[in-house]
Image (cartoon, rainbow, N blue to C red):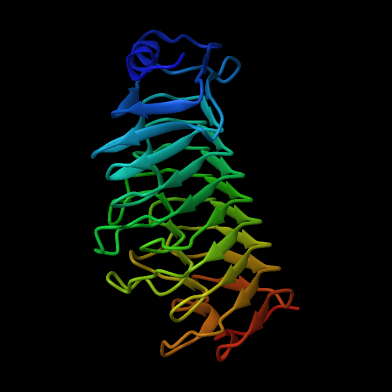
Length: 285
């Protein structure tokens, strides 16, 4: 299909197992999917990077209860937020481009479990300058009922000009995997304490094999925003370039909450260039 009207119509009539194929071109509007696929019969929205969903405000693509969707290849730009998954399980976002937004790029929210974002590019977010421009946002700040668990953020390029952290894993969520990504922190604003590529506030998060450059202070941070959260993070084989950082800590991995009841593990396979050090806790061989 090739028009916004055709796309909006398809989103309201699609059934499990269906594929919506977008021709190259511009699709202007806010696009919302509410019809779920099934674990064995996914719904796919696919096109090339030249199939561009452009919003003037609001959400570019809203998967509202639209579980088991795959979004592949397309570009989402303009608007307040890029791709929002609300109460949508098993969503896979693959090889998309998300940019030119007032706020965050991709958000798994309202207990959207088992979401995957992979092989994608996110840049130029948070244009309103309020520090709300995270590349990838999992969960909801202060809302422990949002169990957007087991998110996988794999092999993406996030930044530059992301006006918040590249990845923010919120309290209330468990089991996120952040693996093989490249982060460019050029454009961090500091407006909401955003001075690192990744903030981990959820539990049992794995951060592995990522590369980061250009940050204002730290590479990665763990935080306990709510009692019992921000625990069990494992850092392995990440390389951090802190050259140019001017903040007070300048650590590749700044652990703010390590205790016997809330462990963080930093393996010796992590490396750092520039800055003031690898981490502020004992390193595990």
